[in-house]
Image 1: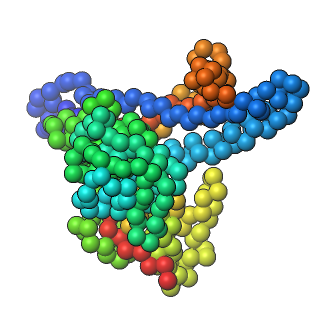
Image 2 (image 1 turned 135 degrees about the vertical axis):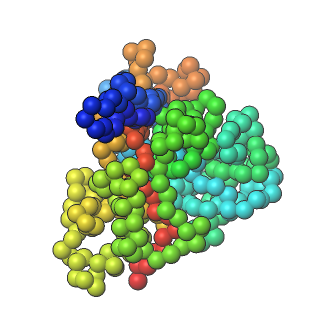
Image 3 (image 1 turned 180 degrees about the horizontal axis):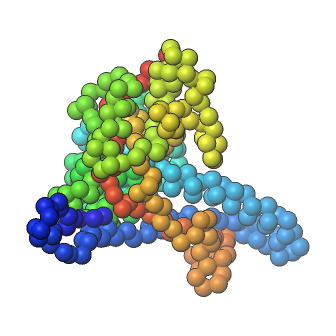
Length: 362
């Protein structure tokens, strides 16, 4: 992004502005690799060698179909995060040496998910992290039960992470609208967005805008949405191209349109099958992975998905896709799919997030 201009008005005969090169601060984004492994039992593999190739093909096809659903879903979940791999944080300081914990949010959690319990705001000690599987989830109390004791963590600020993924995920749209440097990023991760410290002089304008109410929810209104639109224009000359929220908030906005009989006329289908409502000729789109009580006002012109290829690919560095597990010590074959990806931004002060929005779907 441009860091300074050498420009100014003069009267006739006065000295022109000092000539200089345009100066830009470089934002650097490294790609992050997401992996998923699949496996096929030895009996199916042996059947294929004995002329039952259809059994192997069916098993492989079933695995691939599942993975081709899981991988995009995981990337979409990451795009609503902050790069740290956090699935949820603990709602209160809770005693260690336990298997049950109350968390803030369960929307990213499923039974049998492998998670890592660790903590800290600016660094996560992997040596003190503990990996467990989720054995039960109470949706009403948001209590999560793990399959083993959690006996320690790095600090008193624990969180649940995707399996050993702490600090290793792509940046999300929350990073782009944040006003501060990322938390839950390890020293081995990419750290500050684009490698730019927003507290330093070079990062003065390389941060987003958050409109909040100090944690107290307030009703959604078109006036508040207009404030978000105005903020992105005033702070970064932004152009509102897209608004994203969860389904509850999307329904709440739909209720705002209903008294004016605008709901039926203002809903339309976007590419990819998303339904959208209209706000000053801008689509308002619901996303199942968006965190609750917030709206993202996005200028898509300055955001970019960085990737080597559009699809997912097999890991085959040595030319082999299938290989025996554990060097042949286990009677099954395994394979892996991957994708290298990152969310980048040439500008961030044109991105806005409105938080603490109450839902009303009645």
